[in-house]
Length: 125
Image (cartoon, rainbow, N blue to C red; front, side, top):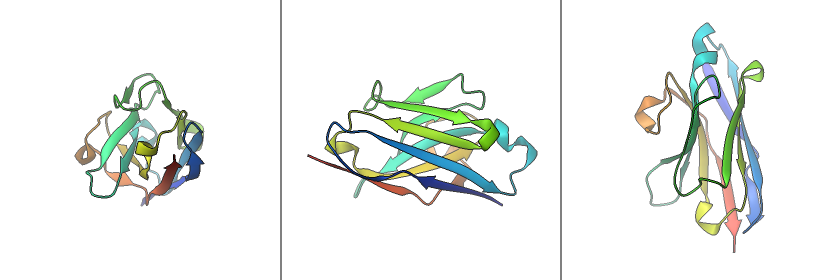
């Protein structure tokens, strides 16, 4: 069974930065390294949305319009870890952030098979 564990969340002032990490552990099967990875977020009362995703090679990426130019997704396949560098944070970025893994690059929640437990990001004004 694959487990995804996020870390790096916390409280930051508007304009600040945070770096989220998501490490995969457990019985990662041979094709897992070829899985796309995504970062999603969910604020209270709102649907879960994809903020960034990256394919297995790290060549193709997706960013939501709301984070384009401020967030950067990257991955280290040797460590089965994906990162989300978040700069110029805004109060509206406040949410629980989840990482996910799926067979192909997508911004849809239903295309991802594995999910982490989430990490809280709070941006104060």
